[in-house]
Image 1 (cartoon, rainbow, N blue to C red):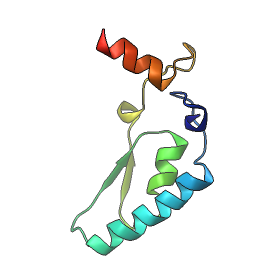
Image 2: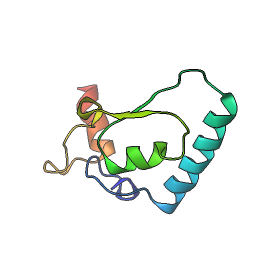
Image 3: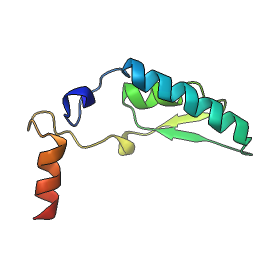
Length: 84
């Protein structure tokens, strides 16, 4: 969805997103954060982004982004709406 500039949907990470997730996991693991808990939404890409992080994970529906797919919003349109 984001490769098309769309908001919403529940797609997998792109190859670039997977690369970012791997680098994020390495960075977080190096930080050695005590008692770290990772929260994600229920969307596949957020769960995939956190998958490599060595910490307990919780998935929260409240963290899901707005369901704008049916309205066919794109990011640039959302920015225009927000400014009004």
